[in-house]
Length: 255
Ligand SMILES: [Zn+2]
Image (cartoon, rainbow, N blue to C red):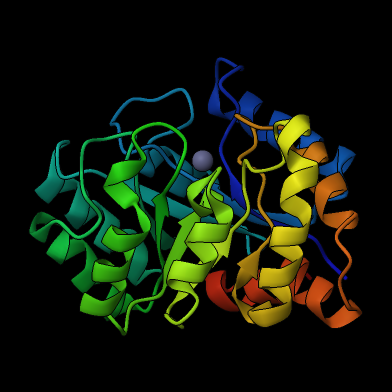
């Protein structure tokens, strides 16, 4: 079984993109990660890499899918055009909305061109949830978005942390939504309480869960340890670590 981390960012440290790249792969190797998803910032200049920087950095990697951050507040039209050029070549394989980091509701009409583009290229739309300012992607807001765009695949990053139970029960019926468990294992004191909640949800929706860590904001190794301790069938574990990410992000190992 391969392990894909479906939610990573380039590290803040490192002065060049080449240094950040090397640090990312070193950390993945240390934790037994075979590939995954690198999410760019929506800012034009960023220590975790802009859309353009991340797409250029990983253009030739079948084992790394770049998801492009986009914001209605930051050069929206120009960045959408740039994103489309990458999506059309599969250099980007998803779109990220920073709802909550930015004051934008997931169902805001201004995001319609983003969802249309996701539908056109068949790529998932990832969105931040939980933590600070959770109102922008609260379960009822997510419900409206996934119902408005039933053909778009959504990925709920962080599962509305810390309200995972509420998140899973409110969203279970929407088959076009997946969950990435990134950041939920970062606080050791709450992680053990969340384990049975995540296990139950994976048992009922095994094809809708993605292993992710939110490296380098969160601890990748702690997230592997968290998932290794989940009581799952072999099939559920393979879906969580490998097959769901392969399917959604078109990941594969280099020959
Ligand atoms: Zn993240």
